[in-house]
Length: 318
Image 1 (cartoon, rainbow, N blue to C red):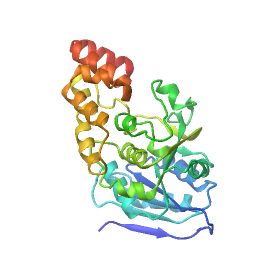
Image 2: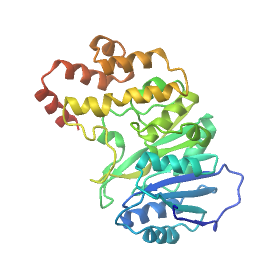
Image 3: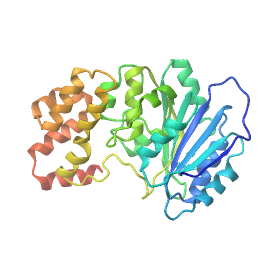
């Protein structure tokens, strides 16, 4: 049976919606985990709860993780649990989403630093815009916490932040919502279960939120996002040639569309562009390129150019 410990000390009385912070950890560097936890404890938002799941870390003792949480989290309740076996990030966040209580969910990595006003500003944005999800920009730091970029857009020039309504067609194909930077209505997150296995859960939750309502964006950098070799995600992670691009970036669209159909009737342009990209139909990809312009241009080029040239292009843009 999974090991669980709970504390309810430090709970603050307020009429503000309850925000539950959901944190999945795996083989954490304790000094980085401590920084992340201290930044959670220093949040200015007055009604918080923390749920943590250790994904069966093989070399970092669970007792050490528990001790770190106990030392750092003093201002609000927390629950910490250990998976019986390693499940992976998506499945662990799915369990956290199932078991957490609260009006709003904030998903959390194990090695970033949140600015004290992060949750306050996101909750205010949701309330002001009547949004079902709010997210922010982030700054990037290195292993030692030194600034790499004041905005994520400095590292990813093609990144475009979206806000407003009717965003599902674009969010289906290209995510701009970092999970660690978002706050979402808990009912939407719960309805997103089960998470598709080939789509990162924050992308999936953002897509369903955009399908159901308004998305708000806060331009401030409310997180110091730590970039290091152990980061799990990256826009072109695992991609080195035409075949790996199709395997990791195009093939998962089939599963995503199948899962999406279980929640809503997709707009025709989503169906057509998905099928065009999977089938390599150049004319249809070009026709619907506005949904994902950079991907469309690259995929058309990849179908026409030799593999060696495609590999060189990928090395330059990664």
